[in-house]
Image (tube, rainbow, N blue to C red; front, top):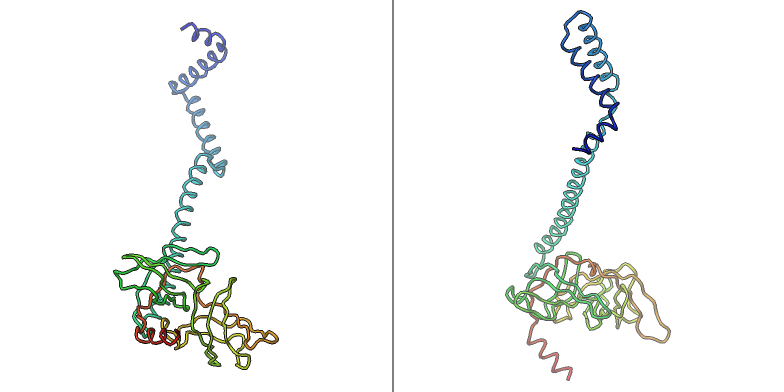
Length: 275
């Protein structure tokens, strides 16, 4: 109470002014003389004029709230746009894969890539299909663009596939235009090497490379890549051929497993012949 009294004494001039103003307003409101009515009319007109004249000045608090709402809507629309773009890209990829499945000559099992191991010299992917879907070791793995690799090991629900960028991967391949045969290997870098192609054979940059009929694992005719470079080494019987893969092995998301089982009798006889 004492503090309140001290505050009132400190600001007594302001309090007295406030009381006088309130009393004046009360007296003006209580009176109904012509002079008072004229003052009221002038006051109302003046206030209306001022509101109309300064109506273009935006309300700070209204603008702040509007900006907050617009920012929230912008975030929501950005997220929705991102989802729509992702759905459109996935739809395009699946359409290409379905086209491959429709025109292919073999049975396929579609799979999603759930893991990648692109380190050093043994690059592999993990996919979400396994024994339960009929996937087995050595089955080819492809995309709509071309060959990816082959299955190494499986479990009931998952499988690990060896990609073309694996030092132990060997693929029997053929240059589509000139029909030159060779063995495709990876020795590091962003391209493959087509080995054992004689210098006398016609191979040019831009030639398509596909799997050949000499493989017991891969069906013939699967696209692999494009010849990106050729050169000869003096004294060597074979030419060096570099091949750029068609499939983007580092950005795989969906693949197909070709459920083709190698001809066991052919494999057995070839193994006996090599002993």
